[in-house]
Length: 444
Image (tube, rainbow, N blue to C red; front, side):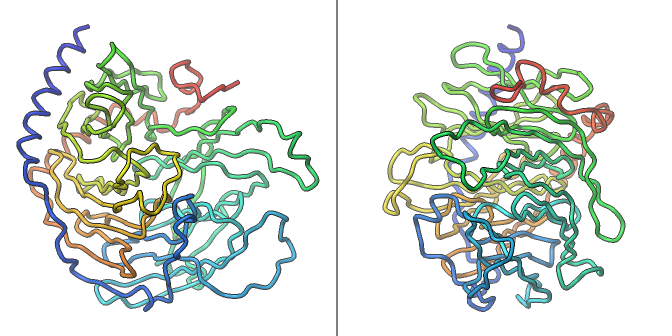
């Protein structure tokens, strides 16, 4: 294959250059600001089992460059609710808007949550998606309307159980996966697999801080799944031979774009960090995923380098306009799989690295803790100039270097590759998913 031969060479060149650049990794500096979490009324959970299981105990997100949204489980007594269900695990979540750099709380509210699963996702323009059971709400924490509830508005009501929420890198396409609820009195021995409803929505910011959802497709599957997608298309990984993989981008308008390839001894795991670029983890022998590469829709393999540890409990926070993204990884003393239960002694640390997407340069390394499977204990600011982490009872803020003119120029260059794809943002998403190579697991 012509593409395969060309890409092997491209990957080799990028890899060699990156190896030289990464000979001396960046060490964690001192934070620019640090605030005790007790100042906000938050005492981090001490149950290592709960954190490793995937419970969401706290989240940290930038609203804009000067404000953070901190949410956490508050320890307080609660009255029994009239609509409480048999399997509910009710608890109070406190949400606070923190001003920087002084750490002042300028707005706050509380929510009654009924389980320990993820409940908050950042949207564009300083807005957020909030989940309560199967219902979805929008938040506008700095808006003028409904300030006492952080601008909470109903978006989507459902009696079904939410299995997964995924957002495109620009936060303009939403994937929601749900299943019918288990009913009281159902015999566990009679439980059958539940069909997963797969719904896609265009996320539209409205004047006044509101958000609306516009349907963009529906499908069904026998199991929840994850997908590498943007508002314009879906990324497909194609195996070309035993160790060489190609990436194809299938637009919702029906166009297939052949992109760069990856030399890996295992199937790469890919994530978009902007509408025009993605990174992938692969293996350099065996099944340990210890390669990381950056790619874009211009069919370029921008960089590839080896990493110290295989990806585990990954979290990603991106700043597309700045050409930067942050990746959280979990460092262990034993080889571990994604769904493996680890003991506290198996976990060495949880580490966040901020990268420049143009060259794969490491700009900052910091640590967060206690280690948790769930995402949310770190955040990169929208301008790419600050990183916030929850670490050791502190809220720490790190400053990053200014974005270089070369990075800004490269970002604009990559954005030009999206112009011919704009028509795809209005197409039905599931027309692409119906193709065999993109079909959700066991889809009808």
